[in-house]
Amino acid sequence: MNNSIVQNMIDSIERPAIFIDTQYTILAVNEAYRGTYESEVVLGKSRCFEISHDHSSPCDKHGEDCPIQTCMSTQKSSNVMHVHNTEFGKTYCDILMKPVKDADGMVIGFLEILDKINFAAAEPQKNKMIGKSAPFKKMLTQINRAAKADIAVLLHGETGTGKELVARALHDSSERADKPFVVIECTGLNENLFESELFGHEKGAFTGATHSKKGLIEIANGGTVFFDEIADVALSMQVKLLRLIETQCYRTVGGLKQRKANFRLICASHKNLLTLVDEGLFRKDLYYRIAGFPINLPSLSQREEDIPALCKYFLSLTKQKTKRFSEDALTHLSRYSFPGNIRELKNIVEHAALLANEDIIEIADLPEHVLHSQHRLHNDNKDGMALAGNGHSPHTTTSEGSNNIKSLEQVEADYLRFLCENPSLTIDELANNLDLSTRTLYRKLQKYGLKYD
Image (tube, rainbow, N blue to C red; front, side):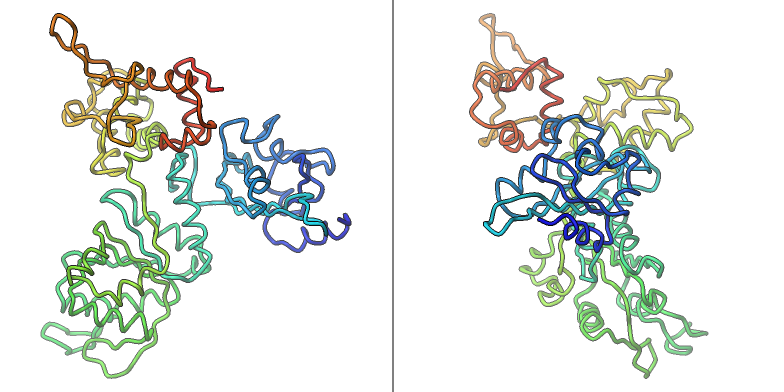
């Protein structure tokens, strides 16, 4: 392909972009990409992983998904969420990789387009979502894609998973970012109060209405309205809410004039709305209006890899910010089920920091309910039976009749050793079957001194 044509194509893209050959060498780059990284790009010499990661070899050699590898195997576009070393430090980037083919259909290179994520970080940062686990990165991709459109988003997740934080990220990353972000708490609002709060009221509309009042929909004009716990809206009010969404029009309580509404809709619920639809407690037509782009927020029990960074961040917000958790305490926390999710972890960190007499927070400093809880079993097989290295249940009985119970860490080590001695999958396939990211699997193997060939 003609170099000038490639360069013109790259220059026409507003976001950071490069053209890479099949050997990872950068052949064309736009100014937006040059301005993103501290390392200088030398055309025909610099390779993509050197600039973005300071690596000496491709990302897949370091336990990360490589979009180029996926493009080469599928012959289709691929995307991945990576942490890049930018001028602002380690920054999440949503990477879109497109294979470029010649007249004969042969792949001759790849077009890489970057989208920098400003609402999340892999390391502790104030006012940002923190994490690096596979479920967390999947959520970031969904947030970033939904933010660019005006589509209605439905957030579903357990209590404490950060639904309002995600809603705020959707707003701040949208074209409405400079307009209001209005939160409507649906829980506890009776029908009359809900309608008045939503649409506003005129003076004298009801007893006590001594003056007119703007509704939240009017206050949010041009911006985003976030309905938290949308499942708690009464059926009778769901009809009026549906009309508002469908027509973008409403009337104040006691008013006759029809007003126009201009807002982006985000809703959230910890309840399964489709189940409520089947039970007749939530309108089906309203559900499909608000669920244009559903996003499931992973529970903290699915984000084991993120717990150390979250602990460090929450500690930095306390007066005991010089303290840190011991490895044993972090391991104990990683096996806790966290029914209250991130909100509960924040409380646990504050509690433990106050209890700890030393700068190192040990297991004994954790709250009683965490110490005495039933831990999650890790790396269970498909039938739910925990396996030890010898293929038996980790709970065995000695000839003397006493219990010989292995620690969960020993069970994990034995099981990984067994898998390493009997390899039948690629490292990526094995990580997927274990419900881990490839990077986490590499970390665990290194921890136990194992190697998977």
